[in-house]
Length: 293
Image 1 (cartoon, rainbow, N blue to C red):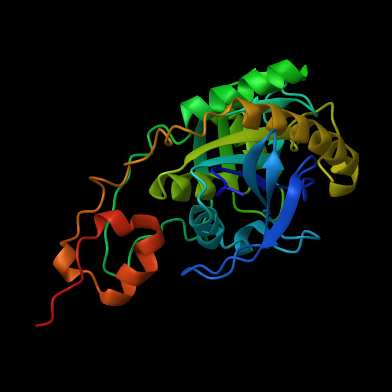
Image 2 (cartoon, one colour):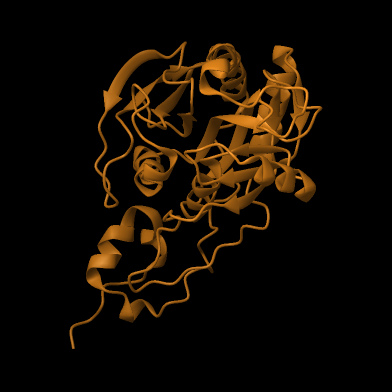
């Protein structure tokens, strides 16, 4: 089988990818530690695809415990350059109802405890994140959801909160005043790291509830959203299948080259250990090894 160019990371409710053929599990070692689980590699719509359960099989890992760097680096090592995220979210606007899909184009960060860059330890890099979602991939996901006949909303802002607790009522009301559309706990770190890894990234935000701002709806409780999670997972699998079929894997990611001018550290000053760790992500841009004094 060819190396997978397309990756799918499944969130709450989506722990496997239906329809994968010629399946094999691959454990990937990365310089950033262990990914959430083994990657499941197979063929979907006739194309090689790598799937990862974001929270691990059996949903064992908190959002704040996720090794986002290892997850993205593992996809990169497998050959992926387009990453589809499937994520459970709360709705912050009345028009986004449970079981709807939002395909956001922006993110807002409210996390506090997370590593969300591959760089540091002697290397400084600044990538552009003005448009954190790959528009080409986002449009493919939106068209796939439309073709599947589900209620889907074009564009929107995903607020990424720390968790694992849901919002307070005051927080939920303030977020609505900011004009955000959906709220989740995982996607912004993935988007940042995917950009550093020169991957396209886009999200299927699967609505499960109204957070706790909606006066006519019960406050969000996990027990109340499990059935919606199951329904959303079935929908997401069909939308992803349509999207995979539409992706042109013969062309490079539109974000290939995003690191070309981002690294500003003098290559001769990069520590050898850091150079080795960054090789899978930025090896083309780090220059030669540091010369001995």
